[in-house]
Length: 249
Ligand SMILES: NC(=O)c1ccc[n+]([C@@H]2O[C@H](COP(=O)([O-])OP(=O)(O)OC[C@H]3O[C@@H](n4cnc5c(N)ncnc54)[C@H](OP(=O)(O)O)[C@@H]3O)[C@@H](O)[C@H]2O)c1
Image (tube, rainbow, N blue to C red):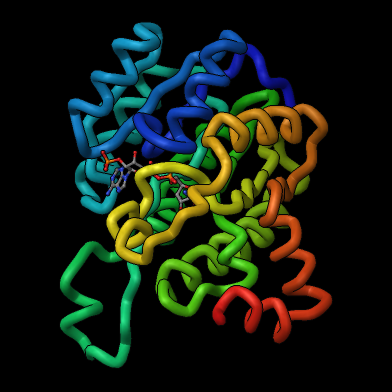
């Protein structure tokens, strides 16, 4: 996959891994569009890279999702890469019942329903391009779950499954399907809970994820497991019980 001259939509591209990808792709001369709910974060990104295009959008709202799709396909006719990156992470204790599940944002909506819906919207657009891609950001925790965040891990396992099926369905088309599988990364993702747990290891820098991703895209490596996520992916296949116990002590 070429990493220059593309037109790329990155969901959740104003912070963390999404912003690092936006930055890396802008530096390679691509046209980059980012979206997110917080306008001030999008403005910060645009102040740093004025050539980035931004759109305020809550992707969990069907009307906003559809409006984003229509805006992108009319304003950026060359769109050839969709990066499904936006996501949230929550600790949920099922012993506390339904209130603990319901008192917060719905991880299934943003982490799973949104990428599936956006893929369905954009695939017909991407099929018309000479070379195009869908890049799904899953997680090492999709391979071995961390039990304190059960819904998050389930959505990421589902994203792995969805990526496999999409890749198979699209194998004779112009669309390549990549899955980025990050380890723990130092971002705002569920930062409150990380602090609460007294987590000292903050993970790798988002820029490292971006670097590894661009390198792998160029080589058409479809499953991009990064750092410790490689161990989780391998462990899930070779020694699942021991690896599960290991991260859930
Ligand atoms: N950090 C890690 O350790 C790690 C590890 C593995 C995988 N990942 C995955 O990497 C992806 C990016 O996460 P990150 O770590 O970079 O965290 P982050 O900085 O919090 O990024 C998440 C982005 O998603 C956007 N977003 C969330 N809900 C949205 C919604 N309803 N509509 C539109 N945008 C929304 C956020 O922007 P707004 O809040 O402004 O909407 C934010 O820009 C996620 O899919 C995450 O699961 C992260």
